[in-house]
Length: 263
Image (cartoon, rainbow, N blue to C red; front, side, top):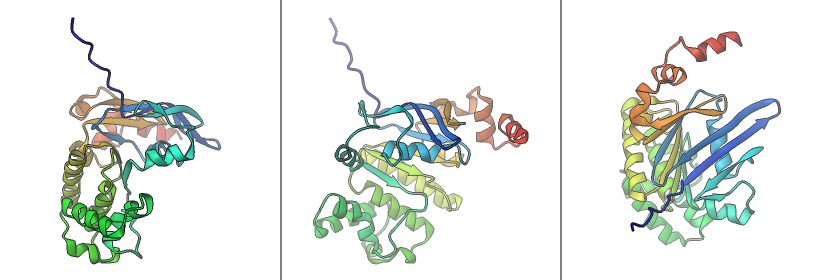
């Protein structure tokens, strides 16, 4: 008699999440799951709720309805101490890197280690220099201020900070925004490399379809607060969904534009 294969829980699961701000219904039953070590890219137009969903996962916003599970455990109404424990395992690359201008690069990278985990500065600096090396930056960059960095270097520093604590979940908010196509490709390659080295589960939000194709295992499209299609990135060109086809091909004509005209 063969043993049953143990069921693998999604690393992250959103189930029927709703979030409104006054009369504006941003998330309308948002449901999606991400398996361990999987890279999910959420695509969708501006204002579709991509960032709101990330903030709900982080506990910065509380859903009006629905539940969010991490490692199979509900997280929407957990205690503050439990939330801190979960968020300590999460890294994030912000859209504009969000570096502290008053701190040198190495201290930006080590910020969560020093302030969040109480690590001694000397050890935190060693780790910061190691993480900078992982994203292709030398130790000399660690001495610079953020204002001395190019856009691509700032993104690399932001990525180094995101992986500094060896998180098991990483969020990427528009990782290629503001970069030229070549540097965008470089950053995407680094994201894939670093996520695999850390062994993390990743959720990215982006408008950049070239970037999405490079970093995704799975793609989900958010429209009117709901996931209307999800599948392997290899299936996106034959999704059978008119909204997805219009979005990924940047077409002026299609169901999304028709609804804009009605508005």
